[in-house]
Image (cartoon, rainbow, N blue to C red; front, side, top):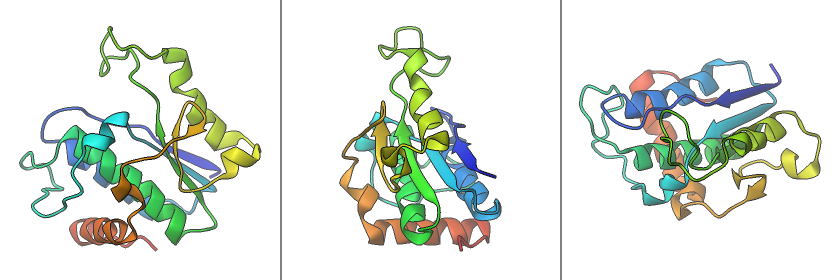
Amino acid sequence: MDSLVHNAGVYTGQRILPVNVVAPYLLTACVDRPKRLIYLTSGMHRGGRAVLDGMDWSGARTTGTYSDSKLFVAALAAAVARIRPDVLSNSVDPGWVPTRMGGPGAPDDLRLGHLTQEWLATSDDPDARTSGGYWYHQRLRAPHPAVHDERFQDDLIDALARFTGVQLA
């Protein structure tokens, strides 16, 4: 497999952590090392809390917000870039686009929403061959500080490994 784009997401309810965080973790751990991994996050990750205590990864109860989940997935992408230097791993903010989740009043251009993922998944452009970045419309942006905090990354990976019983090698 050349590229894997982790694009599934939910905005509200008990499924936030299982869908937005646990599923990408498991796919990353179980799929035989694609060359490129792209994780969809959101500008809302900046409002996330870098707190793992008390998170119910099963979704039996709602313990994390959408912003928390997108912070976690951006940190997961950065951790994979560090742990697997042979894999290009990045997170992408597609913008607030008019989808069923984003709503009809979302201000970003739907046509631009997918371009960065496609570019990171296929391009030989040197910028697209960067790993560990947080991207918005093909430009690197500064993410929440916790995204590049290696201790937070390791704690997140450990929490997900304990919950799933699957190690990220």
